[in-house]
Every structure is written in structure tokens, then in C-alpha cells.
Amino acid sequence: MTRSFTFPGLGTRVIFGAGSLAQTGAEVGRLGHARALILSTPHQRPEADALSAQLCTLCAGVFAQATMHTPTDVTAKAIAAYNALGADCVVSLGGGSTTGLGKAIATRTGADQVVIPTTYAGSEMTDILGETADGQKTTRRDPSIRPETVIYDVDLTLSLPYALTVTSALNAIAHAMEAFYAPDRNPVIELMCRDAMRVFSGVLPVLQRRPQDPDARAEALYAAWCCSTALGQVSMALHHKLAHVLGGSFNLPHAETHAVLLPHTTAFNEAAVPGLLAPIAAAFGGATAGGALWDFAARIGAPLKLSDLGLAEADLDRAADLAIKTPYPNPRPFDRADIRRLLQQAFDGRRPTN
Image (cartoon, rainbow, N blue to C red; front, side, top):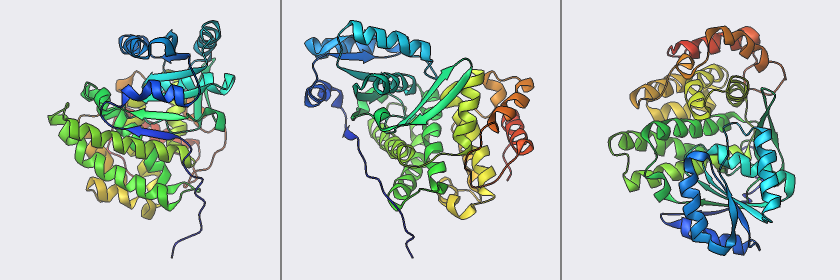
């Protein structure tokens, strides 16, 4: 029997396909704008400059200082540039750092956003913004944060390094994992999450052998869209809280942190809701969801230890304290000792147990 549910609908326009970057100017115009500020990280400045040349007079300028975990001081500089250049919308070209900066500008100025993801990390379809100030990362949701248009150009992922392919894909899978047990889950999102698991489990080993395979890249980007949509539609719990603590307070790399935590947070909550997470075990070919994800991560060369990401063992106590500082819903109740054990397991890189 189908349970009662609410599906809020999808509010972001999606353009998907190889070569779709060429539609950026048309989207800026469709939204009623004529002076877009292009955002990127310093590393992706050449791609931002190329897009600027493509947009020609529709481009007000380029701000290429997007930074991991969206520091508020960088946002202040970007808004100053936005105002000084007379921009009327933002175009975010890149991964989660750039998408986050665009959202931070939008929620403060009312600017429309066109987001062009180049990884699988998956924040582009959401109304979620995580920002860092004074060594603390805080997350909030608001309709003003959700982008108006997302352009998924498969061609932009063909040169994505394999290591980043793996970690950003596992980051995306984490969104779907938590969506399976979210209290506000619904059948539409569950179907998308099941399909994303199926696709990622099959396509990541292909990309390990042929990282520039265009068909495999298209499948992976589709799966990332499914996971991003899930993140934007339902509540997240323990996994995302721990990732934000480790990223915001210890400056750990975002995608890699998600990748390492994923099997452990999955196994922890699987003990309480094994039936809800059974689709993960089935998709990745294991007896348990947490174990199957750890085995899969090991096979495709993903990072397995928090210790390899720059976290010190002495930091684990403080991380556990921060993780329980503010109460939040989770399918399995926990205390500080539970979180400390989970973090130790992830720090050591041991195969998880429930």
C-alpha cells in the first residue's frame, strides 16, 4: 500500500546534453537579464574567461575567487564586484564551491542564477547553502537560494580527473542515501535515487578504465542530477551534518570527506532502517548497504581514511563535540560516544560494521 506523501514539485529548469553550454546566453536572456557576472574558482578561470567571450556583451565580468566551504568574506568581495560591475544575474561555472558562491550572492541580492556544474557533487538543484565564518560552517534552506536554471553539459565532464570523478560521485550518492530514509521522502525521489544507484554502480568502473568515455560521462551526469534533485527535495541527517563539521571546522576537502564518511554513516543508520537502505545493498552487490559501499569505494580507488585527508586523531574529540552540539533528526538515535566511534572507524579506514 502506498503511504501518504507530499511532493513539492521541481522548481529549477534543467537543460541537459552535450554542447548545452552554448545555451547559456539564451538562458540569461530568457530570465530577462543582460549583464551576467560569471563565477569560478581560480583554477577554472580559463573556462570562465572562455564563457565570458562566448557571452560577449551579456557578460558584465568574471569573479574567479570561489573557495571551498563558501567563506563569507569571499562572498562579500563577490557582492562588491557584482555591484561595481552593474551585474543583474550570476552564472556559476564549476563545482560545489562556485555553486555555493552563486547561491550566497543570490540570497543576499535577489540575483537570478544559471548554474553550470562541472563535477557530480550535486548542490545545484537545491535550496541549501552552507557557509563558513570563524571556523564554523552553518547550513540553511530558503527559496531564494535555489537556482533558476541548471545547464548540464556532458562535454564539461570529459576532462574531469578520475580522482575527482570518484569522490564527487560518492558525494552525490550520499545525497541519495540519506533521501531513502528522510522523513519527508516521496516515491518520485525514491525512484530517482534507485536509478542513480544503479547507474553509478555500473558506470564508475567504466570510467575507471575509460575516463573520457562520452556515453559513460552522460550516464554519470544524469545520475548526479538525480542525486542533486533528491538533496533539494528532502531533509538530510547525520551524514551531511558530519561532513559539514569536518569541512567547516577542520577545512577538510568537501567531496573527499563525503566519500570517506559515506559507508560509515550508511552502516550506522542501516542498523535502524535496514529495509529503507536495502536498495543500496542491491545496487552495489553486497549483503549490507554500508559494507557494499565500502567495498565499491575500495574497488574504484576512492579514499577510505579521514587520516589521509589531513585530519589529526586529536581532532576527533572536538569533531564529536561539534557534531552533537545542535540536535537534528536522524533515523537512529545517537550520543557522543556513538559519533566518536564512527569517526574513529572512518579515521582508521576500517570496513564499517553496524
